[in-house]
Length: 249
Image (cartoon, rainbow, N blue to C red):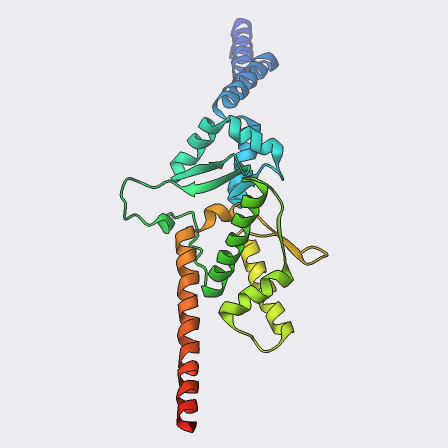
């Protein structure tokens, strides 16, 4: 049977053990402050994170639509580049047009496929889409030559695009089909960020990213090839007409 002093010692030991297992509120508060301070030092600034997320969300950022985020990225290029570098991505800068865009960081290998990047979807355009891009890019270049490089709101009416598209693609048979075809193509290019939706006056805005979307030499070559195809299609008709007229004579 334990004596009086044994019981007192056991109570003292139990009390000390309880106090060691439960730290004080002040100690817990100090530890949480130190942990949050460490995390804040490691994490990137919130404004840089938000601006970079916006850039990655759409692949581009225009000063006209998001001026605050645009300035954040432009003034913290080193941090943004550091964020994109592990993803093999880089930031393209076009200050004249007020445009920042994501591009694939290419290695020194000249034969590397730019679209082999695992996070970038291959976005090949079909013939009709490529043709419309070439036409829109011509209008965009003409707009900048007239209004100055970087001038915003390069607009064009739907009715102005219809005859140009018809030259290369032919007449679908009715005006409604022709307009539907053009509106469908424009909606597809809108998904690439190249144009806006038609407004109440059936005008679209050609967005400045079109200047970096495709190689102008390739687009010009496409137009030249289409002209050759049209010439080859019409030349047999002309020659047959001449032959028939000679036979009549």
